[in-house]
Image (cartoon, rainbow, N blue to C red; front, side):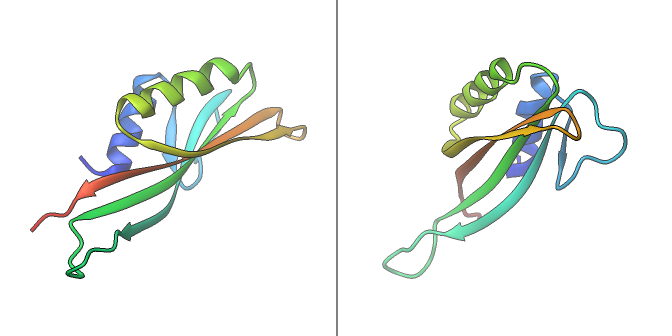
Length: 113
């Protein structure tokens, strides 16, 4: 399973709509947007990487109380061996009525030969 497939599976398992890049169509009262940020090779003495680290930002938009969802998302990510490098309450968007919370995540994947 790819990085984005794994994230989508975890978030949809929480019954939260999720899309990559931007939410298309009419946005529901709660949704997640995944923004891929990086995929890097760790340094190795022989200059042949064995693992690739992929990183993304998950943005939760919620018109209700986002705290419960923040905790659920954090738990499923940690249980699936994702590293959470940052979490941030971005703020309340008065023009849309959404609370915006985000988490920057990373995960190592073994390189295929």
